[in-house]
Picture 1: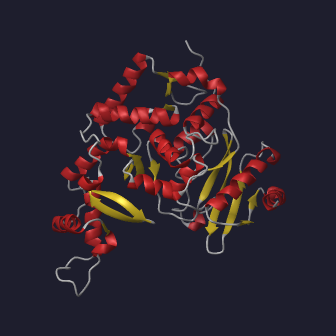
Picture 2: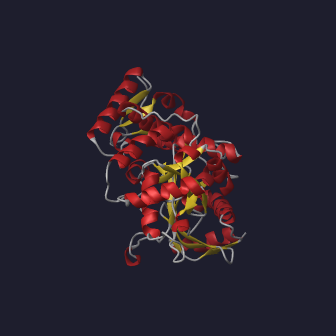
Picture 3: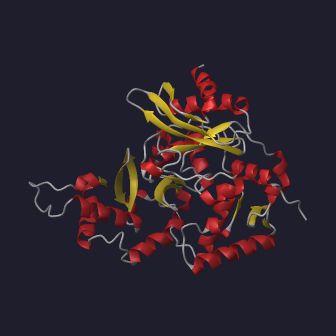
Length: 398
């Protein structure tokens, strides 16, 4: 019988599996970006650009020399594709077949959200087949163009429906403007397009979660995915792995039981933390809010969707991770035109750890992140508790 790890050990295990305990956990360059994506299973895409967009930020956190062009190149090379995980995401092309169940479900059902006009859908497909890849704006009506009886909105809805049901894929982007092409022209011929069985799909979800987090739960595996068939299939996969001894079921300090990879229990004493990480609010490590609260005692909510008068911390806060402790969060904004990076409000929530321990690493992380955002100047506007402001301001100005 293996020794049950402590809560602190579980924290380090999941941070290591997330690629947050080493400087270059996946290597460097474009190959490291692909390795990170294949290991994590997905990277969430977000349109907000208060600071560098979430998909770039999340990868930069794990690949220190990350460049946005790396991700674009991987899309061009057909090693990465866009679709839906629990939200809009970049996924490894090797996992394409696991997107098929959702594509086929949407194709076979007239869902309200994607209820596009079938005539417009046919026109969009015919146009792309005849003229090549298109953006939504290419379908804007022009009064002098014959046959343009539809306007941009129906065409955009048709593009999204065709994309979600798998007839179109996103072949590239210009900023956040997506370029669509026929799936048959984008998808490599070597990719497996056999629809997975419910058991195979559940196995994919379970193994992705275990690989990316070290340990997981039924709730996390089925996050935003409904249906008894899936739940039963996931339970079957977990039971099979338990019987093989590949995973164990453990409970720590009153927290609900989790399933953990057995090999991690053998090496957990070798794991250690490192420095400060400024995480994206959409980072894979923070996206399961209940999990983070349970295992790290950190209650994080993104407040950009909350009315201003109800915000407690700020519009776009980044969680601050120091070793295995979330010491606070900082509301940031990159003023790109004047190359100024503003720390609007820095909240230090764990005051048991003296600033002298985390401040040098925090300063380095902030300066690196400002540079990644194309900014040269740092501005610290507000700190809570305020007694730390002068010390932090001095460190940032050195």
